[in-house]
Image 1 (cartoon, rainbow, N blue to C red):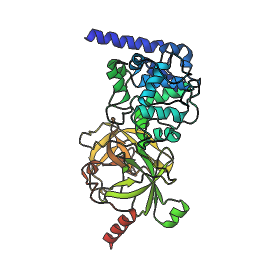
Image 2 (cartoon, rainbow, N blue to C red):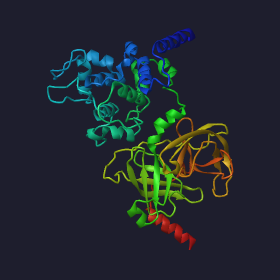
Image 3 (cartoon, helix red, strand yellow):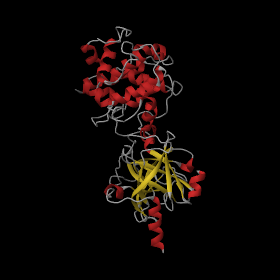
Image 4 (cartoon, helix red, strand yellow):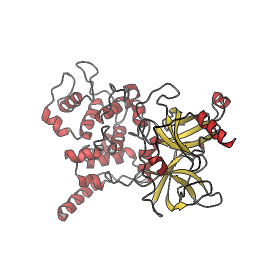
Length: 432
């Protein structure tokens, strides 16, 4: 068994070695294409011409790649290629027919598919979303907004517009490999292994089944769930769109429940959560807060300030600090100085640092944060939240503090809710 496994890994290394070297200058598209080729999703013979990555991607190309990404190429070929479309080449017919039957794609008319027409970002993202189980009929997304929704839920890490190149499609496929199906049946790469499209050894050797995330992977997968929090203390500030302060926050459920520091909301009457997509959603209510441990749980509205409704949010899983030890690697994601989302890495220095201003011992670590990072997420290497980034020792070096998220994990988030104004009034009354 060991000899067979060693032979398989050697074969994989030879395959990857035969492809063009993926240096930093080669770009993301080529690196993605090499990964997809190793997984049998892209023809490795195309490596000789860089997979034609700069050419426009056609609708026919997109359908072929989509069916392969779903691990359904064998099923498509076995089912045959009878379609109602008169313009689909024979070689693509089985894939188009299969994708149509699955409800992933449709023609431009009852008898035309337009296979050579360039695929757009919205059309490709709509196909990906349908493959993953999202549906327009369920109100999950709309085709004209599919690319924005894909970025919103973290399926892709950046915004794509207009016609796509083959390289764009390769990059988006690579990111989709570790994305889960909507019904919770696993990730795309897990489905590919189950279907026999690729082997477990190949997927593992490429790092696609690793539970631990690199900083880059954590940024790609987790940033969509983190937001900049703008706090307004007076109506005049709201009218002038001039917040009194900026902080950070992160989502912990698909329906808009989020965590931040209490001091990030203190004295506020209105707050806006702005994501990396540029979309801003008002803080609708406060579900839980504790001034002594400096944590607050809020619910965001599902309608943005521009009137756009969203069916789901990307969110982070909570792990707490029970298994955290000094020396563990951690990642901090927040919105320092209100300038945009930022990611840093470090190690845990202490899991129970006593600090006067906090009722709970803090996690002290070396992952850089700055003013405005309050309320951000401190993650373990699995992308799970262990604490809320909250502050630092002013005169120390790399001595950053984060409040354990454990109280949120046991808090009752269903029995009460308040508006920000009500929280401000209740806290003011305590001081009287």
